[in-house]
Length: 226
Ligand SMILES: Cc1cc2nc3c(=O)[nH]c(=O)nc-3n(C[C@H](O)[C@H](O)[C@H](O)COP(=O)(O)O)c2cc1C
Image (tube, rainbow, N blue to C red; front, side, top):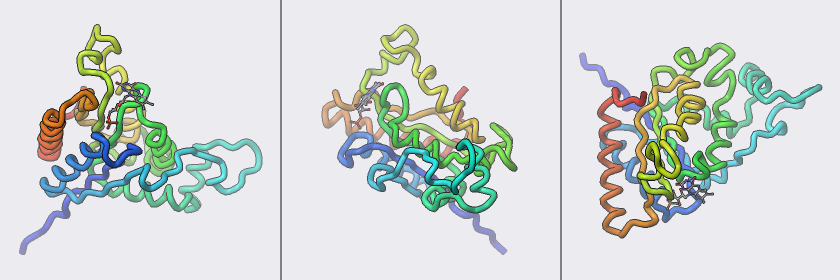
């Protein structure tokens, strides 16, 4: 008798308004690498899908008294009344073994559409809290997540003593505050610094580097950050 393990699933959540951007090319390269490594690749393209990033009271059942977003998320999970778009994305998130957030760095952080995706889809009661705990006891414990992004500034700017300071300082709120908080093991980020200043040839080799880095991530479950 033989047994077949199901292919692991990677969910790439991509946030760039321009399909011809380097960020989008980088996301496509990463998707190809993951596919070649045997992953089933699910891509959520937030701009293309016109994702609404604002967590608003209107997506929940009417409440008497003050609106408390996380309490309403928990209630909506328990009463199965989550907004249909949020529920669909949450199901795709829960089905994924690897989460890749793909974006250009904006203001040392995520573009608003992606931050809003986290606001709405990292639902209390769905991925943490309620019947789940936090960090190692949260719903996504045992799964992996990584950032795939571009910057405007060169790599020297993001080193200790550089103009902006250490990159890890900017990533802490995402790595610890979002990804580890809901249980993920966080992998080393894949970063392309300053694609806008690259020649076509440099961009092509930067995309090759992305493919190689993502292939290593796909092969190596141990490459986690600090
Ligand atoms: C609103 C906005 C904010 C930005 N903030 C930063 C920043 O904080 N640090 C940085 O290095 N680049 C910043 N940039 C530059 C982008 O990161 C850069 O243009 C992008 O990563 C290049 O990739 P792309 O060609 O795929 O857009 C910002 C760009 C925009 C539009």
